[in-house]
Length: 201
Image 1: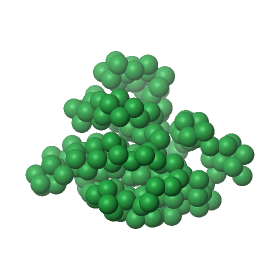
Image 2: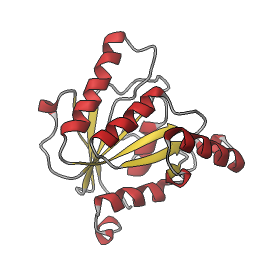
Image 3: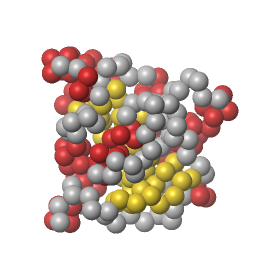
């Protein structure tokens, strides 16, 4: 997908603060420090669209971004950061589930997993929510540049078994090389049924 326009819309914590429903939305979610911000920046072609940080748990609100006036990317708070204040950790779950359960324009969720790690309890909870609310998942494994091809294959099999999915559903991605960008966009636009002529114009 050729992204010629990527703009921040607004941040929100509660449904009353969401932007008015309009364009189809794709949300991005994953444990803290999984590379979510870097993935969104690579997909959008804007290095600084989403702030990246070496400090996990930086995203504390739901952030909305307009892409080509065709769709909205939604950056959900990262979960599982143990050093976050307890009150904030309690807030993240309800904030995410509220969005997943009521947002009528939400069409898919990109669940981001670190290829080097076994899926966490938070990852498993997220998959249960997606099943409960009938939201199609796009499963992306990040940080693939840190493993050899053989190690990647082994880890994809381990992760697939842990989440009871076919390993071919796990889309490999590297923020360093940008490998996987086109395939992830293809999966997203296919789910949204966006006209390919518009996507590539």
